[in-house]
Image 1 (cartoon, rainbow, N blue to C red):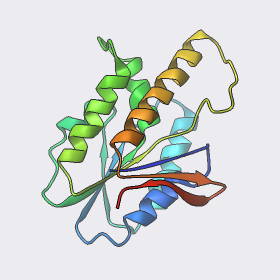
Image 2: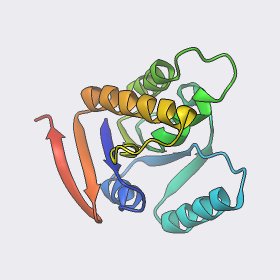
Image 3: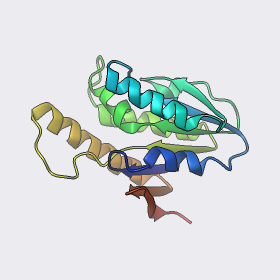
Length: 169
């Protein structure tokens, strides 16, 4: 598993796609964003255009991505853990969205040749944004910590420059 983190518009998605450019098998892009507003629609359209011609098969799934039947010998890019966590947090009957999201990604990692997960360093600025947002930010920090421990490689995208912060040899 490769985890790519960084701030908003820092090049995380573009770098994730670049890492898969040399992969010769099937490339699956799992899009987790719920298209519920104009801003979400713009983000989705931008990502679709960014992927054009790169050989990705896109699966739109907002929950339970570990239940996707994947082809043998494929690489998977999950865009992104931030949305996946929010979808679980605000979904029905989820007591521990951090554990469920981490479990989901671990199971997905076990069913493909390579998994790249894009996440965000949301909350690293220390601002308080209200009770619900603070809880979500805390959950995201916990999820990112779990994912970093599970990952073979962790990359932070800083101003469009990928910086490797963990790499298992």
